[in-house]
Amino acid sequence: MDATLNTPYLCRPFEHGADIVIHSVTKFLGGHGNTLGGVVVEAGRFNWGNGKFPAMTEPVPSYNNVTWWGNFGEYGFLTKLRSEQLRDIGPSLTPQAAWNLLQGVETLPQRMDAHVANAQEVVQWLATDPRIGYVNYAGLEDHPHHERAQKYLPQGIGSVFAFGVAGTDQLSGREVGGRFIENLQLASHLANIGDARTLVLHPASTTHQQLTSEQLESGGVREDLIRISVGLEDPADILWDLDQALTAATGINREGDVVETVTPAAATAEPTSEKAAEGVHA
Ligand SMILES: Cc1ncc(COP(=O)(O)O)c(C=O)c1O
Image (cartoon, rainbow, N blue to C red; front, side, top):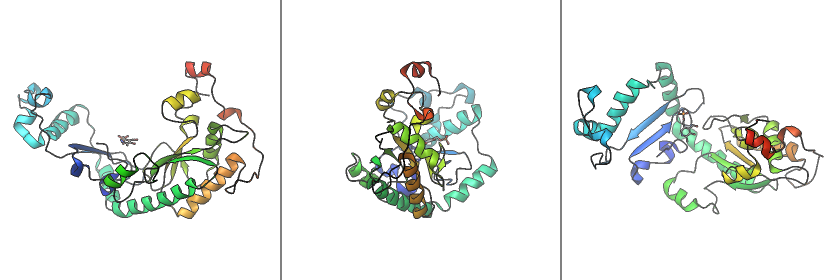
């Protein structure tokens, strides 16, 4: 299980039957988006000798014919990982990176509590804003995984989720998304997540800009979708920023009143299917 978004503070996968848990420590565990790292944790309970994993049970010529499962038992998988992957590919941390990441881990509970509290405020605020089409957060009762989330994430759902900016009479959801991102002043426009700072991304105008609305929809990334990783700033500042960017993007305020005339911009318009087929990045 990839538990990067939850961290061991919010979710304990081994208690629910997982055998291997991975984390990108680059995210919440490190906490500051300044250092790359990853960890693999094995419960040591999986039966690698069940006949389906010859790479774990057959002799390894490059290591004097040891077998990872036969010689190392419950430590077999991680010994294979260290001995083969570290040797062949070399993904080891520098001492400075390890130190940076450990500094982050020391404050994990305090930071995650603050991330969760901020995220809940942002979710409630977005869910009651007329300029927002939907909020996709498992903490909300109408989310399809709400019940499951209560069971597996009793301390909180985390702070990364998606929401949709509604299109207006003048602008498509795609255009509003692009304008919204451009107008944010506090939140950073970044593809990372799990940082102390609030980060946002609008796939339809950046990472997925070559796709048409239909292609985005069929890929599960709607044209109006914004991903947010809620940070540790004062929640009032985060809400101020979201509010002013939504007003600038749509010309409509939180009360639903039109306060400004906005016109479509060519840069955020949907690509033609011809351009999309050529993979042109507008
Ligand atoms: C959920 C999740 N798992 C794993 C990774 C991989 O992280 P890294 O690039 O640090 O290996 C990412 C990176 O975006 C992620 O979001």
